[in-house]
Length: 84
Image (cartoon, rainbow, N blue to C red; front, side, top):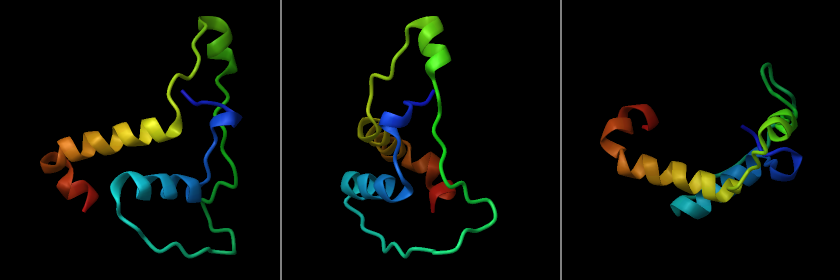
Protein backbone atom coordinates (compact mmCIF):
# COMPACT_ATOMS: atom_id res chain seq x y z
CA UNK A 1 0.00 0.00 0.00
CA UNK A 2 1.09 3.49 -0.62
CA UNK A 3 0.34 6.61 1.30
CA UNK A 4 -0.61 8.82 -1.61
CA UNK A 5 0.79 12.18 -2.62
CA UNK A 6 0.85 13.58 0.92
CA UNK A 7 3.29 10.84 1.98
CA UNK A 8 5.56 11.00 -1.08
CA UNK A 9 9.33 11.22 -0.57
CA UNK A 10 12.12 11.96 -2.99
CA UNK A 11 15.21 9.75 -3.01
CA UNK A 12 17.08 12.62 -1.35
CA UNK A 13 14.47 12.90 1.43
CA UNK A 14 14.52 9.13 1.93
CA UNK A 15 18.31 9.15 2.12
CA UNK A 16 18.27 11.98 4.66
CA UNK A 17 15.82 10.09 6.88
CA UNK A 18 17.97 6.95 6.62
CA UNK A 19 21.07 8.94 7.55
CA UNK A 20 19.25 10.36 10.58
CA UNK A 21 18.03 6.92 11.68
CA UNK A 22 21.34 5.10 11.22
CA UNK A 23 23.84 7.82 12.07
CA UNK A 24 25.68 7.05 8.84
CA UNK A 25 26.33 9.78 6.29
CA UNK A 26 26.92 9.21 2.60
CA UNK A 27 27.93 11.64 -0.07
CA UNK A 28 25.18 12.40 -2.53
CA UNK A 29 26.11 13.63 -5.98
CA UNK A 30 23.35 14.69 -8.35
CA UNK A 31 23.16 13.09 -11.77
CA UNK A 32 21.71 15.77 -14.08
CA UNK A 33 20.81 13.50 -16.99
CA UNK A 34 18.01 10.96 -16.94
CA UNK A 35 19.22 7.38 -17.06
CA UNK A 36 17.56 4.30 -18.51
CA UNK A 37 15.21 2.97 -15.87
CA UNK A 38 14.90 6.25 -13.97
CA UNK A 39 11.37 6.92 -12.82
CA UNK A 40 10.79 10.67 -12.60
CA UNK A 41 7.89 10.32 -10.14
CA UNK A 42 5.96 7.41 -8.65
CA UNK A 43 3.02 7.93 -6.34
CA UNK A 44 0.97 4.97 -5.22
CA UNK A 45 -2.72 5.81 -5.34
CA UNK A 46 -4.52 3.87 -2.62
CA UNK A 47 -7.88 5.60 -2.96
CA UNK A 48 -9.70 2.51 -4.24
CA UNK A 49 -8.53 0.39 -1.30
CA UNK A 50 -9.33 3.22 1.12
CA UNK A 51 -12.85 3.63 -0.32
CA UNK A 52 -13.58 -0.10 -0.41
CA UNK A 53 -12.10 -1.00 3.01
CA UNK A 54 -11.87 2.20 5.03
CA UNK A 55 -8.13 1.62 5.38
CA UNK A 56 -5.91 4.67 5.74
CA UNK A 57 -2.14 4.97 6.23
CA UNK A 58 -1.39 5.07 9.94
CA UNK A 59 2.39 5.25 9.84
CA UNK A 60 4.51 7.95 8.32
CA UNK A 61 7.59 7.36 6.20
CA UNK A 62 10.04 7.98 9.04
CA UNK A 63 8.34 5.38 11.26
CA UNK A 64 8.23 2.87 8.42
CA UNK A 65 11.90 3.38 7.52
CA UNK A 66 12.81 3.19 11.22
CA UNK A 67 11.01 -0.14 11.56
CA UNK A 68 12.81 -1.48 8.49
CA UNK A 69 16.16 -0.35 9.90
CA UNK A 70 15.43 -1.95 13.29
CA UNK A 71 14.50 -5.20 11.55
CA UNK A 72 17.79 -5.14 9.64
CA UNK A 73 19.73 -4.52 12.87
CA UNK A 74 17.90 -7.36 14.64
CA UNK A 75 18.51 -9.72 11.71
CA UNK A 76 22.02 -8.55 10.86
CA UNK A 77 23.49 -12.05 10.63
CA UNK A 78 20.84 -13.13 8.12
CA UNK A 79 21.14 -10.07 5.89
CA UNK A 80 24.87 -9.37 6.12
CA UNK A 81 25.59 -10.96 2.73
CA UNK A 82 22.73 -9.09 1.11
CA UNK A 83 23.41 -5.57 2.38
CA UNK A 84 27.18 -5.65 2.43
